[in-house]
Length: 313
Ligand code: RIB
Ligand code: CA
Image (cartoon, protein in one colour):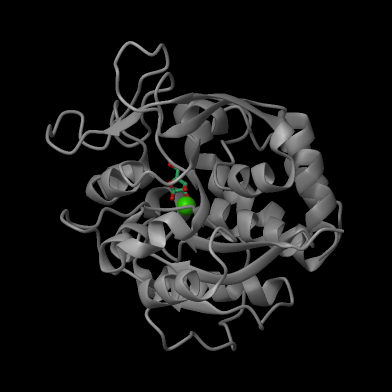
């Protein structure tokens, strides 16, 4: 087997973040160099704790978890307890973490790792607002050409937004950070709502996790049954979109996804469309193509991969 791919997961757990982290932990093709927490779904003091709870659920207290930005670059923090619950990880009863939070600030960890590791060997996997990534790029611009790829969950175009009619949560919370990232010139793979809304946690799929009969499988089913209720009510669907694991699944089986290399520009001026990811899908502008924008997924293959990998934990 080739050398495992080195990744840093930047995250705001969040039940869907949690499943993404579990997928990464169940996949020997990936080497999680560290997990950096960011304020997003819930405040930072909860996202960093939730990241540690998930590592311990998977039996991996060795994973290094760092706390990063407590708020967006410019705007006030907007959270999503209505979706994720007050703890950000409502559903299962997970014990308080015993593993320690790393002392180092997550942004310093990201910069130091990228400057130390061989150039082009680290992939960044942002699953929340892009504040930590933007701060790292501003703190040390020399990291940009050293980053292999950024594979992120965020944005939406044909599907519109999920926080406003125009904007998806991760981009909406910190549009200025997203603007820094999309203008960075770093190779980006974007998992927008256009693809994640096709990955629904139907009852049958949620039961497949529960039928694993393991601590991880049962906790995952409990998380999804809580997490999906908000979007089921909003969209009238059986199940809710499982956003963040699309990022990790792409690293493992890119063939599950289909998309197009486009220009993506982030709205940072108009309150009406703040945080909108304007995707030039038809190439009508001369703007540089800066992201592979995914639009289709083999959702049965995606959930089969998830159940198989989480079944290993
Ligand atoms: O809009 C969905 C995204 O916002 C997901 O990453 C979810 O975890 C929240 O962070
Ligand atoms: Ca997230």
